[in-house]
Image 1 (cartoon, helix red, strand yellow):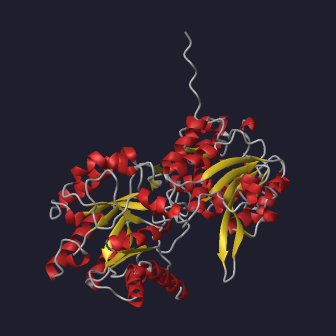
Image 2: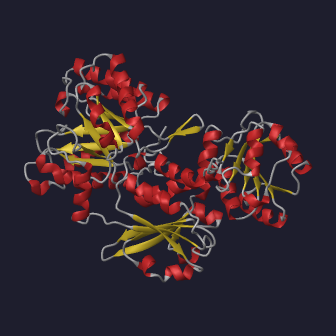
Image 3: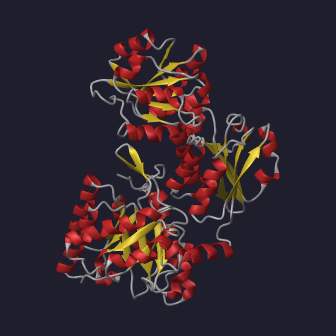
Length: 578
């Protein structure tokens, strides 16, 4: 389950409800009426709102849950902006997130605010949990006992994120009262996001919801409570500007629809255009920094991701012999420079030019990502050059899925300690060791130059072996261990393979960091032995997803990035000979 306030995981609320994300408000009485519009709508939004209380079938559990799954089915071929969804060792990349909403009459919905109506609302929310929706909108002002029971069930048995909500209509309230509504919607730290919709009489107060949300977040921070996204909106045409100001998870309509779900709703295109015109944000330029990088697929991958998310950013190659050339360039110094990917030979050389560095990058000793941040002071806005490393995420994420969440207990025998056998001792091996540590695995290092492997052991712990036969066997026997994963960081030209006993030992996952060729000698050997494998191409798009989400503070279009990499890495079929 997603933890409220988590900003690190790709499935966190700060990604799903991140910057320039939108969900489409559907208000049809029958979900089949959505089908003619679905292809166009999916191009512009990141989730679909399933208004359960507006459907004609709302009181029939089977028909309602079936309708939610039917909406998923309609979206599946067109869900290009969908994030990656880990599922049974794989990633589902065509699942459009659903925001499941049930409204009472006081919240501009269907069910009466009496005991029977509120009980029915909670019943429908239970059905939403059972259907596996990504976001469950829960009104915060009702029966605390029923609310607690619902949240407890969600925490114990489901992965749905909770969006605490409150609609104030038609009366106008003060900013202080609005802040209290946001705090109430946080549900004592149990909600993953909040949505407060206000009413105003004078458009001069059209920033009130936005400002109240900021104050609420500062109070959570002061009280050491989870800081969560705040959806800050104002009802009606008078509140259109609030939808422009609300950068995260804004409810929208679409040009193709015959009607709007609510007065004042704008399309995602209208909102993005307005934000650009009034300079609430500006297009950024990114690049990959390296030397002899004509081969890199990063420009295609990141460029396609920006386009899919309808972000006006651009991505280039910066091919320079020295880091100093880049640091002195107009490109780096420009106001619209947003960050960069970094590859060989500059991952270590860039470090002296950073203002801040992440704990992961500092431990690994290399940086593959720069993010330009802003420190807003009383008199000036200071530019912060921040360095991070997503290479380890490119290794960690696929292995965590394969291992079922990562465990130091081994993959096949709960009585044995799991080990990662890391082959090679360069920069990628350091990222592999860091990932193994996060997975809870002990580490064995094998390299033709043991002295280099010893440096890894000194930093990350673990044992160096000089041979893959008796040396590794001895380490495993002494520690009652088994090999859970093998990570080779050697170049493909080394044609490294494993001894047969490792292949037969207990079914380790075999990871080769090379993305070209697609099938290395090691991977072919492992697949021939029936083992699970992870290719370097998966590492490439996984670390790229991490970079995209750092730069944009939103979820990445996973399938788009994956397809760009595979289109570059998959072996080309030989032309048929006549």
